[in-house]
Amino acid sequence: MRNAVGDVQTVLVLGGGSDIGSAIAARLVQQGARTVVLAGRRPEAYAQAEQSLRSAGATTVHRVSFDADDTDGHPKVIAEVVSTVGDLDVTVVAFGVLGDQSVDEHDPAAAVAVARTNYLGAVSAMTVVSQQLRTQGHGALVVLSSVAGERVRRSNFVYGSTKAGLDGFATGLADALQGTGARVLVVRPGFVVSKMTAGMDKAPLSTTPEAVAEVVVKGLAGSATVVWAPAALRLVMSALRHVPRPVFRRLPV
Picture 1 (cartoon, rainbow, N blue to C red):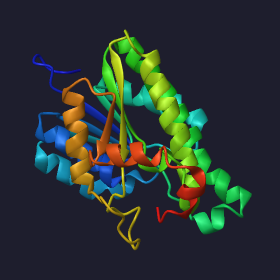
Picture 2: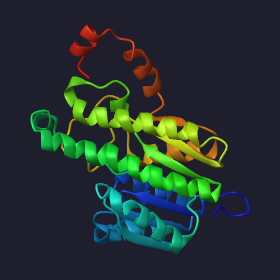
Picture 3: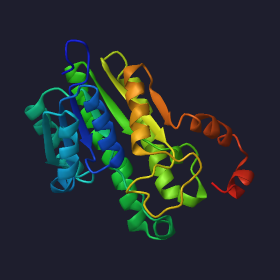
Picture 4: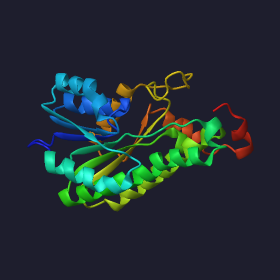
């Protein structure tokens, strides 16, 4: 529950090993959040993240098991988190896999695995969390989308298509939650220098988890429904969205 002046007190990160998710949690802790739940497949590996959050000012940090692909288990996980920490002020949907386009487009099982985590897992988790937010009558759901879903490119269309689906579901959910006291903030980062992109060449307008976190926190402080990181990508993608397809295919994007 937010405190008397409306500051976030409790943060749940679904995808506790995410660099961006951890950065968002840390930034919210710096602003006064005191309880953080890091939920993911390997909670035992989040010790360093927990220590960093405590050093930043968190008084309570829980590490819990959460598997994006185990959609049947999502209601139980969220219910147990709520039972432990109470209302969820901010929930960050930060899990996802990049996949390997060169493999995924030829291997049905590999392509489905990317879709299962990035889209089906996210749809399940967001639906469960949104029901909790409706019950509370407040709370924000932060969804890490991607510019890769704005216009799906040949170079990463398996991953990009999952983000396009995720983005569409999240924006629709935001509309469905109007009037409930709950909200959705869709985050569209570009190339983020992180564990997920280690070893890859940086793309133009690359950013960092900390920079994305700053954009998210500013978005939460206002009434934004969508934020871009960096902001310049909004103009870039607005232009690319209207490039004729034959031309778009030849662009080095």
